[in-house]
Length: 123
Image (cartoon, rainbow, N blue to C red; front, side, top):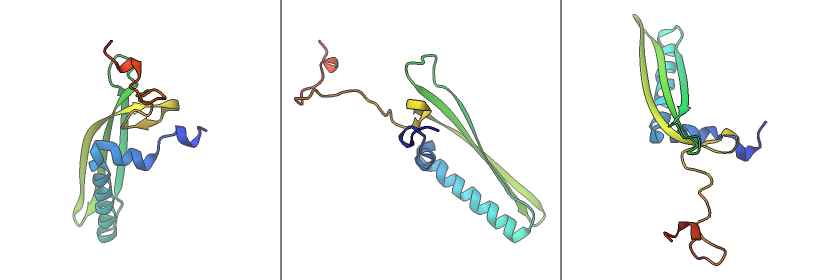
């Protein structure tokens, strides 16, 4: 198993998908499914699907595109209703595959004396 700092933080991951909107959609789907099952009997179903692919042909960029699909089915008095929502979010892949919205290691910006690092100068 990976070290705690090198694994994807799942609550942060969900809150970063689709700029935080996906997390709200997921919560709403869970609410609808639970109410439908309670009020109408039968089974409700909520499904999350993640398709992950490299963002472009360069492996140096260390970014992936995560297509996230939320689908759910809820029982109704005369049958069932279903909905599906698909969006995507680009993310950085850090050490050991940790997914984050911002790059973890953004390089050294300043020298030890506080001056801009020479690599950032246009010289």
